Image (tube, rainbow over all chains, first blue to last red; front, side, top):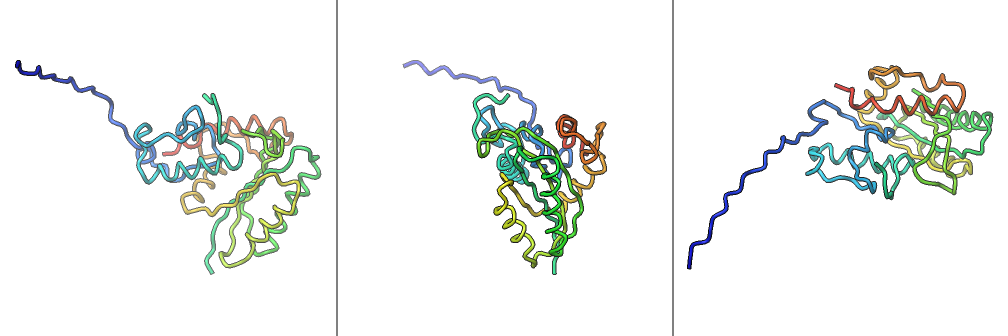
Length: 84
Length: 145
């Protein structure tokens, strides 16, 4: 039996993700600003996970609350097909 | 006797006339001030399009109050009861503001976010108020440093 060929994977270099709230020092996320919150939801209106947006846990919780409040006052939809 | 900042958003039906809208806003304002609340800011977005229909209406008048009240008074209960009893109210949301939120609102009010902001409460006509708001709302958060 021949030895199995070893694969050497070339690592994909991606720019490091960062929390935009920490970086720019935003302390409060306004729930009355749907255009800003659009950055944290997908085209169905669902919240994007942290691993995609790079938000820190502390601010992800705040984003989630803001999006939910924004939906309640009908500035963002609960369900949508094509938002963006 | 701890004081807390609150913010209340009310969506009123679009069928109201300008006068009825003012009356409704004033009655809520009166309720706040008469029950020991101290009104800091009042804002009217005018007729705004909603993201989904509520009671088969696609637009609504958005009215926002920011006020300081005692945590032990029954002001919030009374205010929300008034909202629930009022048939003109489509939706309401009352939240407590933390210190960052208070600061943010203050800055927003003073137009500190770099934008050619037209003061919303000064905008007389509804047709004017809405686009002004849409423009104003885009930038604030990104521009904060």
